[in-house]
Length: 217
Image 1: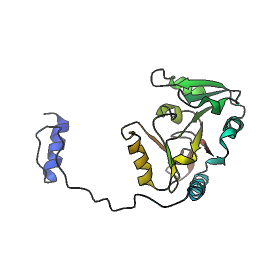
Image 2: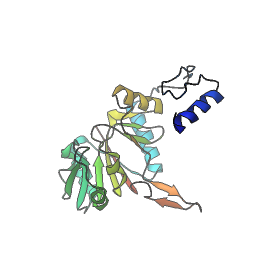
Image 3: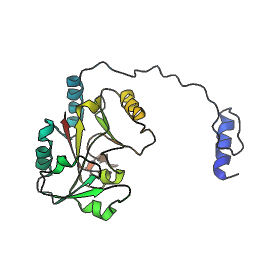
Image 4: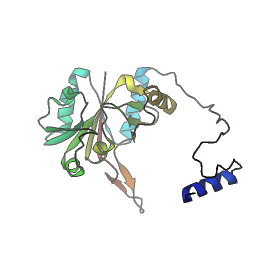
């Protein structure tokens, strides 16, 4: 028996559950009551307004533009960036107006951390956004590996209105429907910000210090 199994067996014993003697087979547990709200009756305009309010409060930039203006807005936000990274399956029309070098990243052909550290920005899509908490989840298609959204200093997210829900259970439901519950996920609520021991806010410690969200059709 390994030390891990011994610890798990002692925990099971303390909780009054059957000791499995090193087995990793799950034991039956009582059903967890889930009597909280799982959906919200809100219209699209209300969801977008709420999400925008939350993101602005987190110091993110928020821009609502028609689909045909996304490339122009992306280029505007990138400014004089010389290089950017994007997921290999991104809609490349979104970056067609930028003059920056566009580097593609994938799980099969990942860029090195040094390369990611040298680029000026990353552009991705989004899986789902939760208006109530101002949170955007990146998982699956068009969002890329976690590294590409954590290392560059500037992150631009293109979010479609149809992917905005109101409350957290709805967002989890989207991940379940798309089979993404076991996929690596990155949950973003504004740009990276930490507070040190003296309560001084420090940006960019655990991810991009600048977050821009383009909301489109």
